[in-house]
Amino acid sequence: MLLTGLNALTGFVLVRSLGKADYAAYSLTFSLLAIAVNASNMGLTSAALGLGGRVWPDGVALRAVLNSAQRLRNSVGGWLALPFAAYCLWQFPQIGTTWSEALALASLVLAAAWVQMQANFYAIVLQLGHSTAALLRNDLGSAMLKLVGAALIAWTGGPVWAVVGWIVLCLVVNYRAHVRATRPLLAHHRHTDETYLRDMRHMVRTNALRTLYWSFEGQIAILLCAWFASTERVADIGALGRLGVLFSIFQAFVASYTLPELAKARTPQHVLQQAFRTLGAAILLTLPILFWAAMHPPSLLWILGPNYAELTEYLLPFLLAGATGQLAAVVYQVCTARAWVALNRYYVALALPFQALLLYTLDLRQIENVILFSWLNNLFFLLFNIAMFVFSWRREAWP
Image (spheres, rainbow, N blue to C red):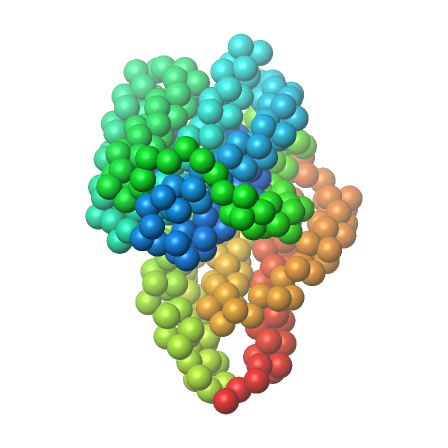
């Protein structure tokens, strides 16, 4: 909670301090970073966690798992780097950056993606070693450093690439701290293992297309504004998205306290009871924010600063779209707690035609239509996950 709060505070400081053009560039930068990290992951962190758990606590074998994951990630990242860099260099000038700023931001995105993935691999080792205190200490230290430095740069009128550069430097600090913390758990071993590489390659091939889809899907609102709308609208959507952190906190709380009981349920009635309890808790936690947005939007928009005070009419629809997405994620987590996600392989094939229809029918130069696209898209995901749960619940072989 503290870590999420520090990251949220950093975001609120920056949205209030940066001008709209700079905040648009900042929002797009971190949307592209999220795409780069997820696209180059391809399920490798899950594979590293699973294989690492099998060989734990063998430090040599664990190092071989880590080396294999890093080697394959570098290979995937290398193939994606050139087209992704070309896209960044095209996209940034479309929202008003100079070519030199676009080059700086694209370079920082690629560097940050590599550093973040490396840090994620070492974080897995710390999790396996029950070194969560060291992991949390490193993350909190990096978050505090990020908050102080980014705030000072923004308050003194520094350029947006300097803010991004400072945040990337904090990622590097966090990564190096993870490396130091894992030294007692890992042997000094530079080799990969062909068995691990084979398993990981299978994971990459299996997940490649779905991973690419979800990488872009997660940033769809910012991307739609960058493609079709104006720089100002990119900033508006990015700023409104900052308020979505409130839903993320609630989702994490619900998942931590209700899903373990759901996973252990043994009867259909108990599963339904726990599922309704989980979804009900998620709804109850989102209602106060929605009520606040409906009754007095200016006070909620105050958090974002004076640049976004005119977004009153868009606040509630945006938060409704976000709440729908969070509920869809909760239902999906309910399904994963029961290992009922086999039907998920059909989602992309069903969602793409629906999204293409929305792209064709909606004028996405208007922010209200971008929000409508997001809401309908999230509603489709929610209904699919509900159907997946009901189908799996009916087909389950109960004892």
